[in-house]
Length: 256
Ligand code: KIV
Image 1 (cartoon, rainbow, N blue to C red):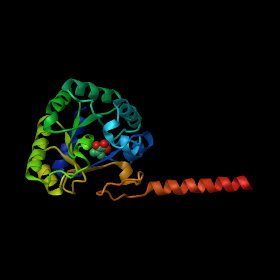
Image 2: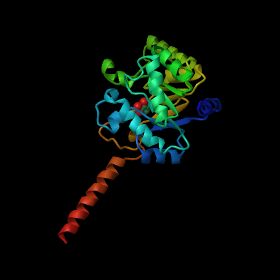
Image 3: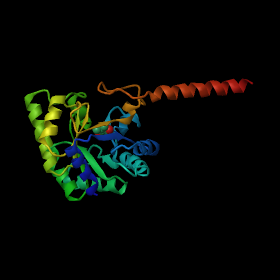
Image 4: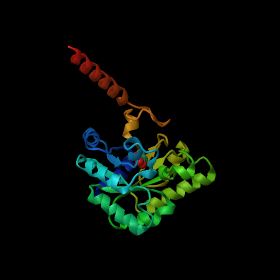
């Protein structure tokens, strides 16, 4: 399984940008895969953009596995990574057991949130031969403790801690690291300091790749769009238009 992730380090060396998007269902995953995306992530953003929770802290392992199975039926070309939901990786043993459940569900690797704080869990997962994507910076599973989605790396001590996180996850065997809402200059420095690719979200253009929640990219969750996203299309508007047209056509036909 690990061979599938080696190409990403090579892409970084060649200066080729890595593309990643989220999917939670079969048709979306198949469309992303057919379009040539490098990495499909079954993110626990599932909780917000699909299940209607306020944040990702209520997403369960069962929900994540259910959606991972659907996405796995669609992805044949890209690398399929699944997010480990909150409280499913509190110890190294639990982290490996959870990661194995995702692999059984069809994931080719897993992601969890944390840097130096989770080195033992990351080492345990990578020692079990399961490809691992790290996630540092703003950690959505900690949004309640943090009191919101705040930009990371503004102060010297935060910047040093993030650099230490990046180095720690690389040494623990991660094949890539997501940098979420990290100030752009620090994201650039981190990308230069480590040899695994950085995949940015709201962290500027100098990361080795970019990831977005697909619903944000295509305007499918119009009630909230992060500041750093410029949707390519507004699918929600198209759905509303089609539904109104259907309603009018049906009611019009009924009167004839
Ligand atoms: O849950 C998620 O979708 C993520 C991202 C990095 C987009 O973790």
